[in-house]
Length: 315
Image (tube, rainbow, N blue to C red; front, side, top):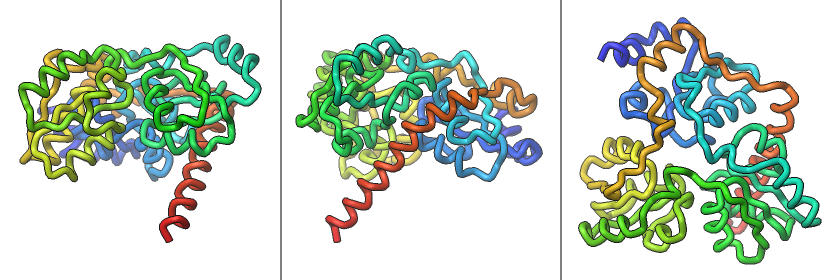
């Protein structure tokens, strides 16, 4: 493929632009193929912050580019598809947050990293699907208002029963509509397969899972498991990474394959176009960046404290 060759076999263009290409697990396989790093949104943002290159081509949806720019203000962040957006990232309101703060004195607004910079500005701390349980446990607040995803909030609440959760009504349009009956049918069709599910799925799906975790957690579990068959309850783009890293294993999806149409808006030719032209640059105002950076930094601080405590307990 010509565009593939331009990005991967001829690195001169990346060298000329002093660029690095980052791709989320859910984008098209041919885009993952040309990426320097593949991962979930927060991992990729950390890579962006530590990369020596001055230009970041972020193959994902809008909030990912924003997060990268917030953590890397001096770098140029380019989005191959500016219209690739995550509806869930917008599913909370300033008014709703204000009302909860007025009603509850001892409340922490906990913001899933899969959210807009505007929502991060209004929050106390950010979390990822991988660290949410530990971060919430570490907070001194009794009341937790988790935004924007209700399914992830319910999953965390089950792990942290000592906290009082106030639920927002946001959801991922891909995971929310996974059909539990189709999961059941997949289990019947593949009785030896383990069900690996993302916590953004509704509880009717999670109750059938053998493992619940982030996208990177699902991949790691499949890689390390002795089992040879898996039913994957998350966006289908992860299949490429699973099959390339576990060629001896089989992966199945539900009859209605979970597809994020926004992630699939990132085409290879668009990656090459922004790399050549510098179009579709992400901009975040200094005020927004400073406000949105605070909950991200608090998450990192808490993560360090948690890691230190775990090491001391182990020793």
